[in-house]
Amino acid sequence: MSPDRISLTRYLIEEQRAGRIGPDLRLLIEVVARACKSISVAVGKGALGGVLGDAGTDGGSINVQGEAQKKLDVLSNEILLEANAWGGHLAGLASEEMEHSQPIPDVYPRGNYLLLFDPLDGSSNIDVNVSVGTIFSVLRCPEGVTSPADEHFLQPGTAQVAAGYCVYGPSTVLVLTVGHGTHFFTLDRELGSFVLTQREVRIPEDTQEFAINASNQRHWEAPVQRYVADLLAGKTGPRGKDFNMRWVASMVADVHRILTRGGVFMYPLDAKCVAKGGRLRLMYEANPMALLVEQAGGAASTGRGRILEVAPTQLHQRVPVFLGSKHEVEAAGRYHAEAS
Ligand code: F6P
Image (cartoon, rainbow, N blue to C red; front, side, top):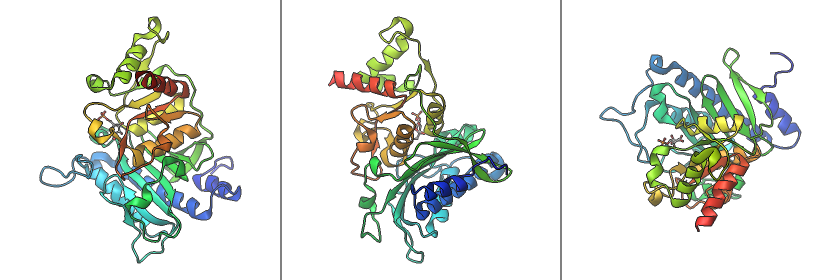
């Protein structure tokens, strides 16, 4: 490897030497990254690996979210559970695919951290060969708790000590923050190692690109209707400029585009998801993405407040999400404020 190439391992060791992370957190992130490499291999095999399609035999299985599980959802969950069970850095795990959190089995030593993950985000895209990803969030296990239960995971996003995602696209990219900037690490498939390819990612504060599932338009709340109508009105409308729209329907891929070139991603409250509080999961999707985006100079809001300050009451809680270029997220917030 060339001397200028900084591997994920070297980046983490340097963060440890600088006193920004401890050895346990470093090793924990290395384990998650290793699991992501295995998932990347499985995703990359596609039909050749026999991993496409629904899980279960008789018409498929349904997860705790009431969604149809794909074979790769189940496999990715197993890979992450197995990889993280025995390392000694974690006290417990929670997954979007499991109803309750799991303490680390008694046979293994328990550490001081809690790991939450969405093993395969955007799984409706698996079978059509479009980017999917793994999202993760790391919290501290509360002092004195040796066998954590669901309630111990209910910490606001500001308490996260690390967050990241791995996008399985044309290349596999791990995006990480340990609270000191957001960085991209691209997987070198020949060497099997993640290499730092962009340090200190910055999201432009202004943008002319937005992402929303426009088929839900008739279900949106009034302020979102007004905000998106003004974006669509373009140069001659109240915003005075033309906007472009993109929607991959994999949050990892949409957020990756926004970290790379700016934009605003929205999954607002709508009449279909109002009873659940929103569409996207606070603990597995909104919080880790909000931390990554804020660390890159962007903003992340529910439309009515900062995502990272939402006090969670349930492990699988959902929230409305507006994140990305700072000025545009603030603009969406103003439409909500004016409506109330
Ligand atoms: O929560 C899972 C997810 O697949 C996200 O990754 C994505 O942004 C969203 O749902 C897609 O929603 P829709 O099916 O409404 O396009």
